[in-house]
Image (cartoon, rainbow, N blue to C red):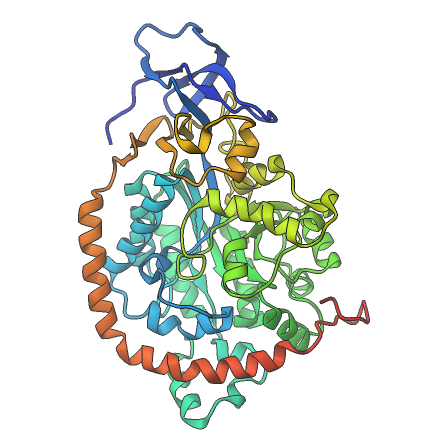
Amino acid sequence: MTTSPLYTIVRNALVLLPGKAQAEPVDLLLEGDTIREIGPRGMSAPADAAIVDAAGKLVHAGLINAHTHGHGALAKAMGDRWTLELLLAAGPWISGNRSLEDKYLSATLNGAEMVLKGTTACYDLFFEVPAPSVEGMSAIAQAYQDVGMRATIAPMVADKTLYEAIPGLYDALPEALRSAVDRFRMQPYAETLKGFEAFVTQTRIDSERLKIALAPTIPLHCSDEFLGACRDCARRFGLGLHSHVSESKIQALSGVKRYGRTLTAHLDKLGLLGPDFTVAHGVWLDPDDMRILAGHGASVAHNPASNMRLGSGLADLRAMLDAGVNVAIGTDGSNSGDNQNMYEATRLASFVSKVRGPDMHQWLTTPEALHAATEGGARALGFQGKIGRIEAGYKADLVFVDLGHINWLPHNRTVNQIVHVEDGTAVRDVMIGGRFVVKDGRLLTIDLAKLARQAEAARERLEAVNAPMKILAEKLQEAVASFCIGLAREPYQVERYGAPLR
């Protein structure tokens, strides 16, 4: 990417400003990577300012993806009719035997899709086998740097497998399958955290573009001792924590069976919750869970596409917002949410609130949905006050949408149209930190043709090397599904209520 001039003036656009339902005809003066001034059309600018003529375009703040998985891009469209537990069982097949180059490639694909569809920052929970490494985390960081986007990267860590995490599942497997899954047992958690801590202490990063966090992947997949170690590690280095909490009914039921309390209550007891904690999904949060999270200033990353795709359920965003929880929106990984389109995720977030019932007062408004997809995400990522809105002092992370595109004919109500109509196809330009990453619909930072060749080559090689894991996954599918379907028939009941929640 070329170096940006000191000043840039964006002229002739319609700009969506904070709290407005309709875009306004204003100019934007940028100083380096920051919005310096917002003024009327024709406002004065330094004589040497670069001019961006945005006539016929709408400018809105870059969308922020609060939950994705960089490793999922190479596993796009590999499964159908998978619950969350079946997706996890298929993990060694769809994500196994990745080289360092594969890890970089997958994260690059992930980032490239996001910026082409108007997303300028993301929270990536990536996975390495058997544990995070300095080299692997450096490759993920480099991928987002090369794409040109901001990211909070959080390696997923655990010390228990799926078969140890769900009470009774391991014993329900046929003996031959128990022997097979024994090979997947995790290493001691101290070893798992060693590589992560080495990266944090040894690697210099651009904190304006990149943040580091830690993702104990699912509480049930972590011993209490490991969760405590993650808590201490995050506090010691001032990092965020992000975990899949109450995503599926199986998770929620298993939490009550194991801990005698909800997963959120258990995390609270262990001291993990705080303003830097993000719950991924939260489909099965109960009212007390929501109050606990709000009391700690925690966030929920809502992933409507994968929640429906995996049959996990419909999260109650209205109840979360009413409780005071910061709500953000994510796409989830392309191995479960299918794409990295935040416009689609935001639209689905709006729609999910509507299909929960006919009381329109409980539905999300389009401003609430867009806030979750921008400022809510900024807070979850740890970039609060820096990105997510077009305001003086904020970073110039801007999306330019073609108002001549069919999506915008006619242009009735800007916020409604972004949330309910736009699907990413009208995005023409994307600027991150005052520099264009996408221009005229073309990604400037990455050679997409080369990326396509690399992706196809990786697909062919991984398909061959992971063929035995595919066979095992197919054998496990029926056994895991049978057990989980039976478990899911039980009512989700917490003692403090004394009655089923669903």
